[in-house]
Amino acid sequence: MKINKKQLNFILLGVLLSLALTIVVASPVNAQDPTPSDDDVNAIAKQLYCPVCENIPLDACGTQACIQWRGIIRDKLAEGWSEKEIKQYFVDQYGDRVLAEPPRRGLNWLVYIVPPIAFLAGAYVLYKGFRTWKAAEDSQGVEKKRNIADMPKEEVDEYILQLEAELKNR
Amino acid sequence: MKKLLVWGGLAALLIIVAIGLNRAQQGQVGVGEKAPDFTLTTFDGEAYRLKDLRGQVVVINFWASWCETCKTEAADLENAWRTYQPRGDVLFLGVDYVDTEPDAKAYLAEFDITYPNGPDKRTKISQAYRIQGVPETFIIDKNGKIVHVQIGPFRSYEEIVSYIEPLLNK
Picture (spheres, rainbow over the protein chains, first blue to last red):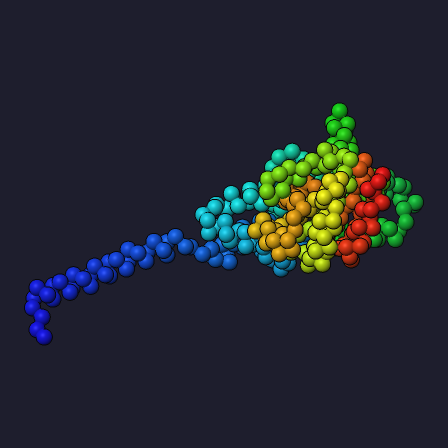
């Protein structure tokens, strides 16, 4: 069977149309179904703590409850929720205590204010303590020196004088 | 003035720490105590306020879908509920602790649980009852006083009934 030019053009057009249709139909499917990776899920999970497993961040917790929570994060990410919205969802459901970082309000401020103040106060107390200690030591040394110098020669212990001289020569 | 401010600040901090420690060391709400009031909104959107349930025996069961031991008592609790439901003076309330809604609903469907159940939003109810884990059940008499605290699952239907029966004619 011989195919003429007109028929060949028609077949080519059909092939091109099919290809174009495949691309148009297939592309949106890929775009609408982004599966969040484990890293995406864990990036949010590590900022949350499940009340059942105290002191273990959600990304490192292996209990059934935590697996369910990570599933929720994955579902919400797939639905297009932002990190902030997901964290707020968990706060609404389970309270502020699920957050690794307590929200900056009310008595929670103590968590942020007290440690640096305590650190600074401790540094100040240490500084004052060292200063007082050094001042006392210096005044004691001066007093000792003055005492020896003021003492009559016959009363000064010759061993002490020898020791002082040796210390000076070092 | 400066010293007074420093000592005042320290005293305030110590008081806050003491209150926190005291709260952390408290055990569950005990037998004989007045049951803390709460409002539970069920998965169906119905609200139950404990205060409004005076004159009824209330069985508050804390559970979660991820809790394996909760499953061992689920059928017995439902059977007990079906026994007392027609009387109208006994109410079972299921408080779903740190759970996800889809898993919780699947659990309720699996065990065909028909008494009112709802999530413990922001874990307020479990904190008020200071539960240590799930399952835990509090049985409250018609005057709003706690008469039994069940730590862990009930072993049988008869065990549940044995705690409720003496309260019916009081």
